[in-house]
Image 1: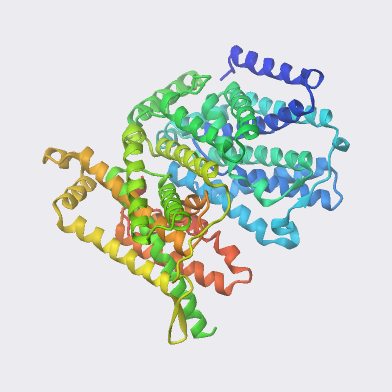
Image 2 (image 1 turned 180 degrees about the vertical axis):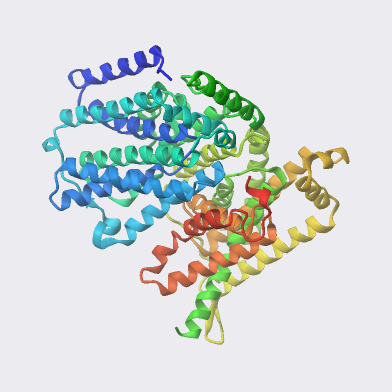
Length: 328
Length: 294
């Protein structure tokens, strides 16, 4: 499907606003901008696996592994770019394993499995101190000599890259396949859609993106430990931002990241410890009152299975005759 | 492998396993009757443990009263949550339920952070350090009492479900919601009773946690991952399965913690291994039926 013009307008507008931010704002706003961009990358990545019906509650696992890959690479004198490539490959590879393991699971089982996965990944990092320095954490070499403006533009570049990948995917047949698998895997399979391969591909791209965000996070903060790199907040935010913003869209995850992460950061200043309350309330409200997200173009979560089945069959028919269904 | 050591590890594991059973039985009961995946179940443990901590350690209340207060508070919260939120998601896709109850769990965790700080706390009773020796194996008195209490509670639940009128009605709803409705059973009321029983058992587990382990805002999360591993290993909706699997997980964790280098650290990830291996090899669990996970 083509990404609608208004979504482009929203994302381009946000991008432009971000591009000029360093000129207009002070160092704290710039730092906030970098954090929001890292989370926007996460949200866009999460959105890709969600498009295939894979709801993950453990993207912190990929994020943290990416951060550690970057840290260990920089410790061994590798350039940041090489470290990022290693991180992305590690994230994608782990995501492949997770999705292969979860191939036949019911979707809610998969969600709980990913929740456990990020915890298990953290345990592995804590328990292999020879490689990771255990709970004490690792330093990461700064990029651009720690210049904040340069870091900001790098973060912007990373987010734009994932947004471009999303746009390209949405134009491809792969996205059509993901939509079919999401709406009704059984119906899609009977029409000859290779659901297993599609799910693995979605998870690999998603995990790679999250790991890339993690690698950048490591270089930006210049120090990581298991607590910060595998923080529950990362998993939570990854899921909540696209849900609030509007699932399976381009503008939704970006909008969600800007709204949710910036308000959570501001709350952190005032409320301190309990600022995660914003995530909880946002998620409950999103499920109860805002099933279509702010962008509001995606299908409702509440759709009964029968409706989904009928629609998937209808889409599949359109796909067979017209060469490409218009995904919801 | 020293047999006394192994026996000690197994006994420790079984005693903790009783606690897992208490949490998991409530979770599996709620699923079996309401078809609800409740990721906020662990938060009932957390709330119960904080109420107990607050009353026992800060206000010096007697343990019995504190436990009753914890159960009442948690049951009250469960009633409100059931009426305001849970009713909207019964019968919707499980994924939907997971996301809503997960959001609810986040709310409770962060409220606990705001109210109590992230520090680990625990309650010390005069009997906390007492142990008895059984042929080389030393058993903490408090842990033994907690285990016996867990057994008694689960046994009571079992008898209640088996023989009381309400219990039979609950089982009827679990078997076939519509048929139960045609027989004049008030399904909504059975949902409410089931949800409150599950939450109340979690609250008792919370009180026990404050006595024999630590209380912190994320303690419910730690419990819920383990409880899901137990419930899925035992077979969703199967109370007997949850009991066997809960004891099994407690024992395995304890044995791994004793014998593997750096054991207690690795044992933390064990629930996840159990979860993923069960889901990959036998998604219906040890005692579940095929339909349970669909």
